Length: 542
Ligand code: F6P
Picture 1 (tube, protein in one colour):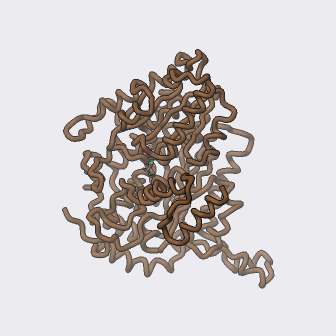
Picture 2 (cartoon, helix red, strand yellow):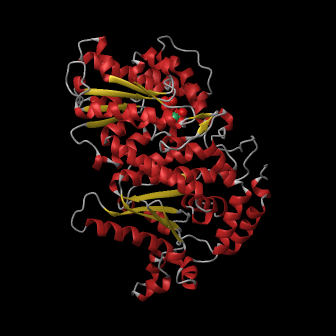
Picture 3 (cartoon, helix red, strand yellow):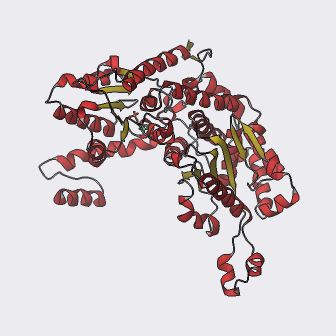
């Protein structure tokens, strides 16, 4: 079925019209009109309670957004993904990260072959390996047990493992150290290993392609570092390096025994891979049982997304709300504000997930989208953000929709801390929505000249996600929620959320510049005058 261009969809036009009326309506009015709003515009599924009542919407907005989803063929697009259609059209690939967390009993076909048994075979190999490392049965070359695990990877081969390592620290084996090296800046590697003993260190080289410049450069430095600590014994590499990749020939070329390689498949995008073998460091840290619980959490959200009616479907509602602010209010960003210290790397993880997926300017068939796509996702854990950038969200001139994420129970209950933390998150969404009028400010005895400075306009939208506790399962549900939220947005814009051609040009130009920096002789430069001058200056300074 061909989908009309965005601007030709009746719901899009109706939403434009509707926005003109609604933009003048305040959340104060919407709440005053409907005393049940706070519970009516809320939904609970897969262990997540979403309160979306503090959004600038009415029942009509919701109905029009749902109509937009329907006119955009969202149902068909969801089914196509779960069915394994090649929806990553520019790379001719299926998009089956949902298969990574499917239970053994599921059947998911890719090119006529059920991929679920392969997924579980890799999970079993990972589990066996993780158990051997955790128990000390897997020993380093000199017979010492592994106490340090260093994941080398970048982008999707780093951000998920880093985020999970922080998020699930409470569940991780505290006698081991987990480090992550991603940046080609030598400082990253140097600092990661400076206090480590090579005899007790295992490197996991994680790269889907096994050709990524940063990762291969860091992996080569890791091999040199290891050999330097092992009196140059090349045989040590086999006990201290394993690989996670789809590219067996390149893994073998690097010198890693492919028996110690954990595979995945081209139908897993890098930014959708933290629950594939890319999660090996996570599994070693938290153990196979907790990893399984995380996968079950992902799957629970997948099932909710696949089967819940759209008006009760958390990723669909959040995706449509993101469209509402991005395309009709002109909001450029979404702030993700987790009130949970363990989620401190969650916004960074979401940046790749959301922006590499939806930072696109053309539709799947190569036509200009004709509207803004991918909002900028950013954030910091609360309450730190409150003492930094919240000022702008409350009283600045920009509209910044916020996703607050909070948990009822802390893994580290400590005196009044959790109540104070939760009081803050509830207070922030309340202050953003309702603000403080000039009359209220004056009634407090504020001198007239100060009143404008102390007014909070309010009407600033937010979602609040409330969960019980940050368990492995909860993390899985949360990540899957954002994966599908991104999918919904991409489906409305009819873009391909699963390719990333935008990273290619810079990579190619860097390859061209490398010899110009490294060569002994002054190179003949044919860049623009700015790039030429920067290269010359660098050569003279280095
Ligand atoms: O940044 C581009 C990208 O291809 C990401 O999509 C990917 O996650 C990252 O590079 C790393 O790629 P690889 O796992 O192949 O090293």
